[in-house]
Length: 408
Image 1 (cartoon, rainbow, N blue to C red):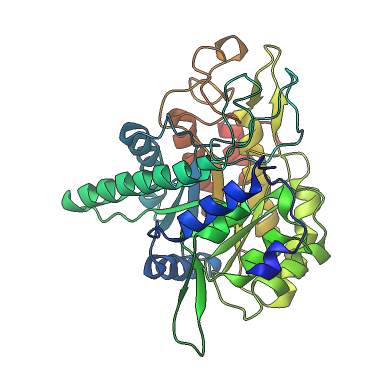
Image 2 (cartoon, rainbow, N blue to C red):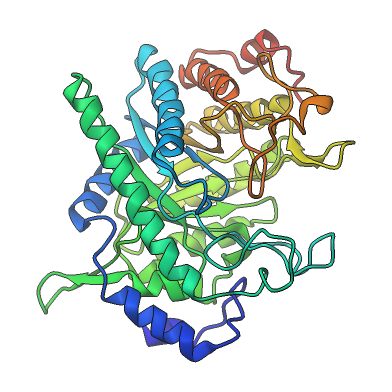
């Protein structure tokens, strides 16, 4: 993968000691994979069903995992929320594919290099510390090694929870995912399988990896890496995405037209999704490729509360999901999933929803390491909205009216 390293790459840590970073990269390369290639292939087959309109993808978890918060209790709590969302959809006859933001979501891209206090930005526990201290904010490559150990533990908790569900008579299989951001870490987790004539390269840090809105430059390293691995790949598409861009991603990331290989994760914002998304969907549909269309209603709907906290309104989240479904219904394409940030604990980070917090409540349990997450009640309510919208006969306006949401 030397050719990937030669390409430009944004949002990468400036390691103070590159030689030490290289040694840690080599150390991680010698360690056991976190997931298996067989399970990666199983997920791709499931996502093929989603792309064909036969199942619905529910993906969610922490905005940013932390080392301190990576406990079995926290992992189980997040998985319980995903399981509850699955139950809501299954009760409405919708087969579900579950993918957790888990066991690797330890790095975050940032808009600014310096935070409001004038310190280097916190970029996730894989890179530096949240502590408000200049030394703690220095990138430390040893954190990649710790991230590997923490991800391995989280994967172990996930497998234990799945076995217990199965023992209780309920088959359970949860796949894990994260943003493929830190190239030193992702390249260290590559493994080759297959014969010499047709080797396949997997990134076995996760089953599913996505390219973020800030790192989706077509001529940069993140897209080049994604093009070379066998994992299912997601691409976040913000409101600046052109139809030509989307077609380029199809050509580079799914050249052989493999259903389930590519997921487009739209994050347009509730006030722009109806304007921007249709042309993108039409252009991709014209290629004939069977991709998964997924809605991230979180990242385009951020705002700052009067208290100074970053937050999101539940009504805006519902409005974007509804607009996403509306676009696909109008075009005759399948709205295949949602991608959300959630917490298993009763956090007060997003405003509104059933018994949801208002601005004066934000500080009570504002615990996220980065962006605001839905709490369990809000996540379940969103699943109820989605369950209604998945029904082709459901009226978007009726569902929004039921929740007291005003369409944009």
